[in-house]
Image (tube, rainbow over all chains, first blue to last red; front, side):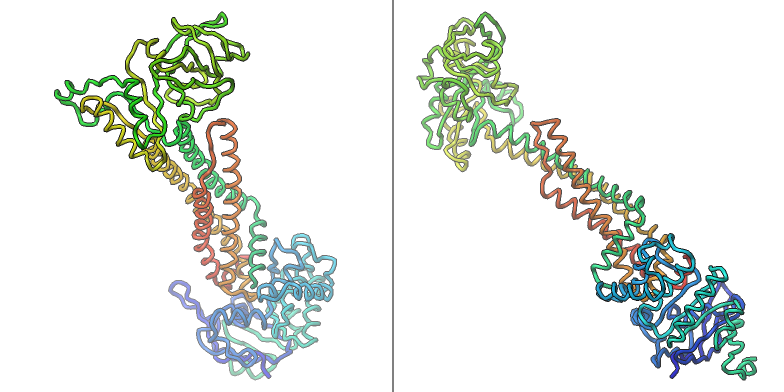
Length: 234
Length: 403
């Protein structure tokens, strides 16, 4: 079953008088457990696509079905609930809350979802162990290395056991070795069945994915899963 | 998000920016403290005045010779309003009125006291035995003036405690002889210190003698005042009516005395000083409004400062209402902390005032405290709404880019 099904997606931005088609004619299906890299030059619409997949943005036309459910017509609060339980975000700049400890940052999505403190503590402790952060539980982000910060962010993104993990340039602020560690961590999660979608402009990371989506000028240029696509798109 | 978590999150957020938070807490605290201290001052003044008047005695009606001019001046008035003397007999006649419990005549003047080889100027008050009860004074030594015919007083005197100190150096003075003007009088009692001065007359520095002696000493036929105690508070008006009528009859149909009640004077002062306190509280409340605007400013800065965090919270599944509640809770906490700090500061300020001026009962009135705390909280919340809504409405994509 497709976890994500996009059909006829359009996203248009109005910048002054000019109209920018950030996404046009987008039809993509992603199966559960897939490992997908969205690639393309900056301005190609890959970040817009990721925001749309994460329900942070709405398409101007087309439909987006997440786990078979049409999520484009949901109210903002219903979309927030879907984000809370079905989608995990990993950002380039980690986006940790500076005044909260590693443990508190990991527990944040559960706190927002209203999960009782006792259950939160138990799940955070497990996550800290799984991600090798048990020595860092009470450290604030500024006391952590870049790699540790991104591991905290990944632990936070997966604590609610989402259906889809969206990573926006997850290695962009890390050195090569640390970046590789983070990629291995994400791939390990994918191997355990989590759908992983990485946005990157780094071909080395992109080619590791089992499927590559090449974006250009808001269009899907090529899809490694459907080689014929490139022909139809041009 | 659970309420306890919202509160904890808001608390941590406020604590995460200590300078910003403490400055807005301080602003709110100053506002509340201003209200508490200023109303303490105003209400203290009111209580002080009320106490001073109450110390005159309870259910008191005072008769003054002469009509207080309220009808304007006319040549006819000038001829007819020459006041008659308010005599001892006039005063004694009042004792027979139905609503009157006690009457004390009062004649006053300055004289010299000479005793124990010392000499000093004193205020002499001529009165009767009833004076002690009417003014509810207590004796330190001996007894007050004996009951006697008001027109034939015995040659005795009661002195204030300060006179005792200055003339007799604090030794027991009962039984000692003094010379007052050309009279020789024996001291029968010393009045307990009252510390009260009414009309510039501190009773600690007064020599009390029978009214007849005072009047011949000053060579006068008119009393300074007649103090009357009504049988009850409800009968004060009746006393006023009866006294006016009785003295009018005795003075050939002319109303040439002024009858004042403590209540009327008190009520006027009470009203006046309450209004003053309210006005002062109103002025102080302006600083609360200013503090509220400051909290709004600070919360707007907080929203801008934490735009990235708001975007993140939205990405992690926070609803707009959750974010709004968190920011509102933060504004409420800052206001509450400010209000409580200010209340403490205000109480301390009032305490210092009481230490510096012990006679001044500077306690904040309950209504002012409640009003100040409520205003602080509601302005904080009210001015917190706009920033909180702004935070809730932020576009997550835009917000995340600002990190």
